[in-house]
Image (cartoon, rainbow, N blue to C red; front, top):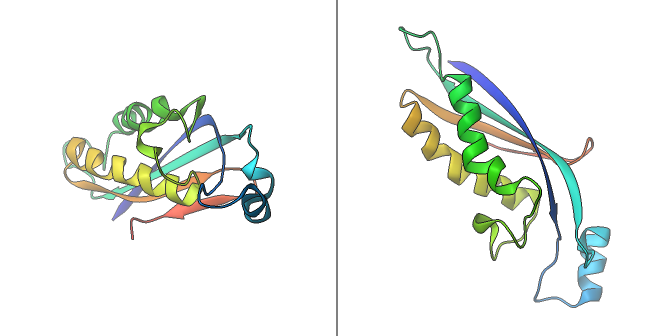
Length: 139
């Protein structure tokens, strides 16, 4: 099994808050991430696809195709946006990195299988800050 990886960057704002809680409870749980005026990050999105190389091309997936797919399906929808307000697939959801990465998986997994039937999405890493990141394997 071969694993190929593509990295993309985007900037986005969000706010962590639970509308069922008081402002005080949100502040207590989420701290500055509950700021009423949002806060932003320079995200890195790392997408790994697994498969066996195609005998004709030698590719598991064409990395240009993967890059274009990630940009079209995710980056173009979230870059310089507010995840809570502007991103259709995050509407009504907690804008935590954990939920965000699962939603990205739900978009990319079928799209990758469509463009490269012999491969599958293996792993996504979403880096929020140099100290904070989440990893998801679709489980």
